[in-house]
Amino acid sequence: MEPESGDPQATFREVRFTTEHDAKVSRAGAIETALAGLVVAALPIVVSMPWWATVLVVLGGVLMLGFAAHLRWAEPESASDTARLESEGVAARAQIADAEDVPDVGVLHRISLLVGADGLTAFEATHLCSNRVCQGAVARHRRGERATLPVLVSPTAGEWMVSHRRASR
Ligand SMILES: [Zn+2]
Image 1 (tube, rainbow, N blue to C red):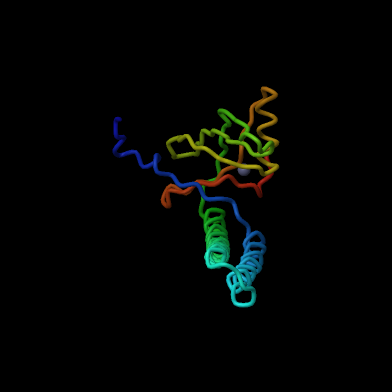
Image 2 (image 1 turned 60 degrees about the horizontal axis):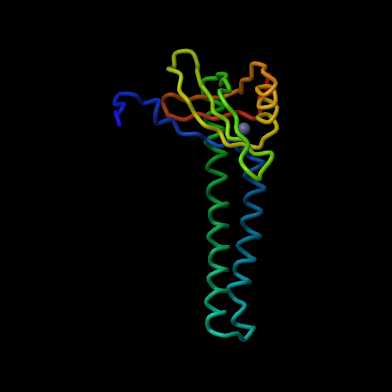
């Protein structure tokens, strides 16, 4: 493999578009999941069961707590990344190069994009998405029309994001 040294574009990180509202919903979901996890983990205290069932139940409860923690932390972080890109990012259009359906999930698309903006070397990126903005663009691409998605790029932070907020044209 030829290492492409001096090509910082290759390391662009995708930020998942998350609004403050999404983050709030996610926090509420995280609290519910955490409570359910605690209840599950505490079951062996009130219900007598074989030792191996106790192990499985406690493990299940701990997994739910872990999932809750992931929801709690990942979404608010994405929301602040989203807000930062929306205030500092360079607005650009990404050309859809290709779009595949993810098997068994009809509305989920793996979209290959060519992202370009003024003063920025174009780079290729993949966006896995079921958002209606992206679905509409994939439909246009499949009708043979020119299809682009609104993106925001921050060359300094090395981040990019498909902006589902801005209406697709
Ligand atoms: Zn999308």
